[in-house]
Length: 117
Image 1: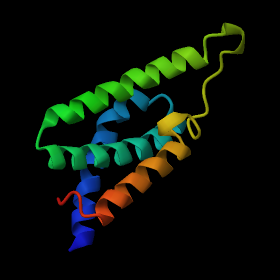
Image 2: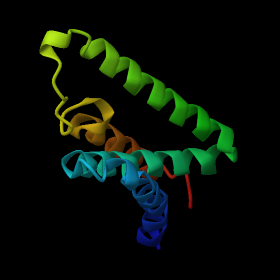
Image 3: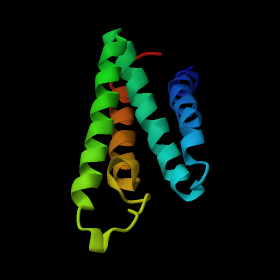
């Protein structure tokens, strides 16, 4: 039964990744790490939605994520002489370190039974 619940939690993240696919048609190399990120963050947002019973909490987290990503990229790459595309596998939350943090958070919240789907 727990496996079915986990699959339902990840379904929202998968849908969110597919939703963002049209923006990445020209750069498939960056879509795969972003897809992993959206599945994990989408799962966390789904858990947040179930815990708070409010879509507004998810909207605020999504907006904060987008704002922080844009700010980070603008700050990290302000020197035009060194402007190069960031490595999508290591950049912030959408890279492997961010995946590890989000996966750990999902595992801890699931193990504690904080959210049921």
